[in-house]
Image (tube, rainbow, N blue to C red; front, side):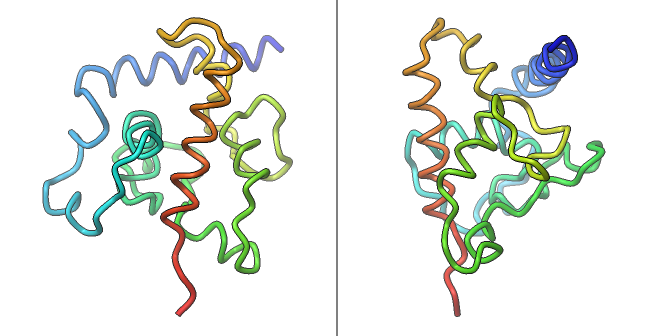
Length: 149
């Protein structure tokens, strides 16, 4: 349990040191890169840009500005359905993002435990708020899946 708390603190400190001074993750990306593919503007896309894009990239391809400094390379999140036989794994993605009930072999050790981080956010403790944020991210990721050609 202490290891998990330390891990959350490390990611929180990383976010405070790197992300917050620059506003959102988009500050790390050139305007040309951000224009590659229009990203739908939703609550989930805003959360993604704020919490996920620094590692996964603004296009969710696993090429964020911090990706090279991680022990485990971030996944291309647009290929989740493709890697799962064409079906988007909603429940598994929810568990990976939340992180409090780890999915064996997924969400590498560098992946923050967003369920804990969202509980400690400025919204105050609310399991319902955590669920809303995680579900918004899950829905957003579903909306950007690569379509079979």
